[in-house]
Amino acid sequence: MASLSGFTGSSISSEWAGLSWKQFIPIQKPTISVSKNSSKARSNASSSSVKMAISVEKRLILQKSEEVFNAAKDLMPGGVNSPVRAFKSVGGQPIVFDKVKGSRAWDVDGNEYIDYVGSWGPAIIGHADDKVNAALIETLQKGTSFGAPCVLENTLAEMVIAAVPSIEMVRFVNSGTEACMGCVRLARAFTGREKLVKFEGCYHGHADPFLVKAGSGVATLGLPDSPGVPKAATFPTLTAPYNDFDAVKQLFEANKGDIATVILEPVVGNSGFIAPKREFLDGLRKLTEEHGTLLIFDEVMTGFRIAYGGAQEYFGMKPDLTTLGKIIGGGLPVGAYGGRRDIMEMVAPAGPMYQAGTLSGNPLAMTAGIHTLKRLQEHGTYEYLDKITGELVKGLLEVGRKAGHALCGGHISGMFGFFFTEGPVYSFGDAKKSDTAKFARFHRGMLEEGVYLAPSQYEAGFTSLAHSLEDIQSTISAAEKVFRSI
Image (cartoon, rainbow, N blue to C red):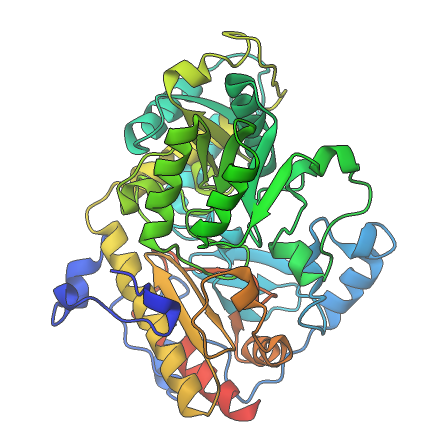
């Protein structure tokens, strides 16, 4: 299972010790043995077999990426459609992708990378899965958007409700931001209150109420808040440090009867990977129940990733409302929020709380989600993700510390992270002690070695079922070289 205590290391639980890799593999893996230094092995490997990272002797050439990005800067703000893609915190030339498949990505210059971003989480079964693509092509022939009900919405809704412990009804939207907006609006409508509690470094999308001490791209760019957000929009937003239950109790004491909801990432992915203390989660559940406040788990990242039923299955507790995204769309734009039936029946047209979306529940996103979740139901899926991710984090920490670097990190299932600091890291304040300049050098070095990591110290990483033992070993070997050079 996960390495959680203090995030000072990552280990594999003794229950998996001594077991064969084959016992964890839910889908057939290539059996070819590939050696980085063996040209014969490389020549024998077919295009569908596992390939190793770019040779350490090869200098990364990004001429086409530079040309495309320079043109983009005249067309789009900063040359991107989401800020962290611009590589502002790590420097250097952003990578312009051309195609992806399995655990791999290729840029427009033809460079190949082992990818640990996975479209920021959705690609849990691997990029461009053949079965998902075939289903999408079949659905595409019927149309891309109906603006009317379709049976695929029912199918995915049934799967989500069956999987996520707290969800009795669900509403599909088009992004995680939309899901969090709708969820907080619903909590306010249900309780008749306005104030919400969020945690420093947690990111719940770019809606006005959430851009207060947000993590992720806001932290990456060094912007504590965003211009253009009215004071009135953030006045009801109260903040506390993550994992600090006493701070939350003080907010409730100072705002008795006024707090509609507490929203949090049950495992933080937008300040880097930070897991919760068990007593912190238990305390929030008890406190919100005592005060008639709704507890929202933002599981846009953790939903269907750290367990099939998300963080609430993993930790064995039920929030009142849940937001989802990423994996449930199988790589297509999607979001969802759901929870107790009595709360959800306030959503229009069943109730008075209005929320709508033209492309919500579109057949393509529903199809990709359905077939992704089907794959995740296969035996051994999450055991395999936990095994390979644990090996990855353990290896990175070992070679990094051996090279003399202060490092800490951890993982749960297919979600991981590490920081250039001794740790432990329990909050965004702890995460900010990281040596971000060193991370930037490490990130660039890993690109040179053919490994694509999130271009920010404050983002979690993701593995997939398509990542192989060879991928993990190659990544650790690449990191060992980079750690020695920075």
